[in-house]
Image 1 (cartoon, rainbow, N blue to C red):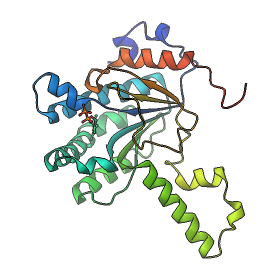
Image 2: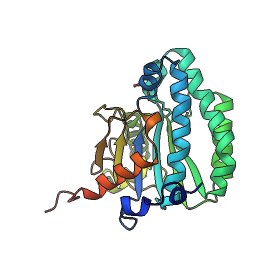
Image 3: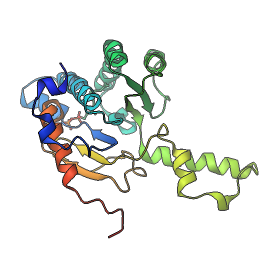
Image 4: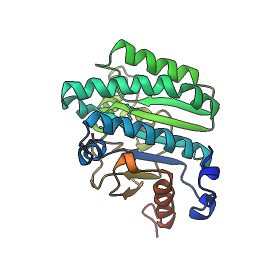
Length: 248
Ligand code: FPP
C-alpha cells in the first residue's frame, strides 16, 4: 500500500514541496527495543529490517531522491560474533527479499563502506543488488555497511597523497570540492538532515565530513517503532528549521 493510501493526510503533515533531497538515518535502538520485550537482540534487528522496508517505501512515495542508512559501522565488528554474523545474514536476506520490490518502486541501491572483511556471500549479494537496481532513478537507497567516516576521510587523503606523489596532482589544487569528490559518497549530495533514533545524541562516525551543514534531529523512539508517522513528524520538524549555512 502506498504511503498516501496508508496515511491519507500525509500531504497535510508535511509540505510536499519542501522535502529534503537527502535524508540520512542512524537506525539505533534495536537492542533496547528487544530487551524491553525480553526478546533476543537479533529479534530487534529483524524488527528493524521491517521498519527499513517501510521507511524506504515512504521515501520513494514522497519522491525524496536519496536515503542513506547506517546499517553496520566499522566499529560494529567489536560486537559478539553471533550478532555480527546475524547482521551479515540479515543483510543478505534483506537484499534477496526486497530486490523485486525495490526494482518495481524505482529504488536504486548503492553501498557505502569497505568490502574488507565481508564474506563472499555478502559481497555477492551486494553486487547483485547494485547491478539489478542500477537503472532505477526515483530514489537512491545508500546503505552504509562496514562504514566508518574517519576511515573514509583517511582513505581519501591517502588517494590524494598518492596522486601528489606521482606528480599527477598539484597540492594547491586540493580544496573542499576536490576533497568531497574524492570522498565521493557515491556522487550524492550532502545530507540535508540526519535523523537518529533511540535517544542517543551523537553521530558515531557517520558521514562526519558530509554532515557539516546537515540539520540533526534526535528522537527517543527506538528504530523498530519508527513508523511512517514518526518519519513524517520528523520531516515536518526539519521543515521548521532555518538553514543559514553560515549566512544571515
Ligand atoms: C543499532 O541498534 C543498529 C544496528 C547496529 C544495526 C542496524 C540494523 C538494522 C536496523 C537492520 C537493518 C540492517 C540490515 C543489515 C539490512 P543497536 O543494536 O545498537 O541497539 P541498542 O543501542 O539498543 O543496543
